[in-house]
Length: 198
Image 1 (cartoon, one colour):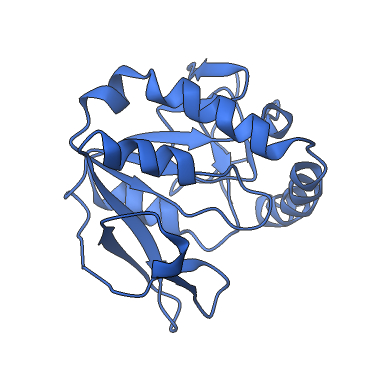
Image 2: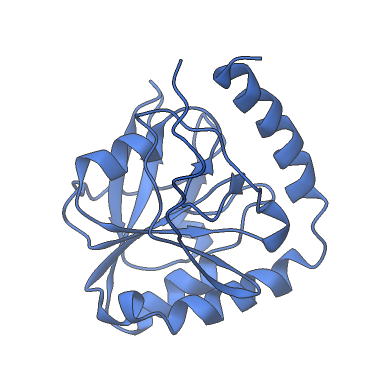
């Protein structure tokens, strides 16, 4: 099985695993609690944070806390043609958001932001390993984003999403940290797990 086929298989398995996590709201609140204590969060002047859909770690409380603390907040916007854009938001009132054509939440009023306008990015994922590699939905949005901007990247996940090893390619970007309901998972270098290539 080649690396792309392996990733497709993992996506199916990990999506099902994440959907089986119980008490996601409680676990998401625990994750937010750990995030708020991060030095990187406390020092950030602006954050980029996804708006959760499906069984993803919920981020509304985290975004609300950032806004309350006076931090600027950017959210991703997937356009109708499938491109990733970014918008500043002023609040987290769900009445100010709508569902885009790709099922993601987007602000009703777009205030454009550009990579580099924020210093901390929260990344959704299906699975992660302790080397900082993640597997997402396969569109490559966050690999492109993390490659285009100098930003500290934090993955948000439930502990059940951890994998021994996530297969990766040269374009895959590593996370700086992963935060789960159990705490902050430090990223470790692992020369014994080689970079896979096609």
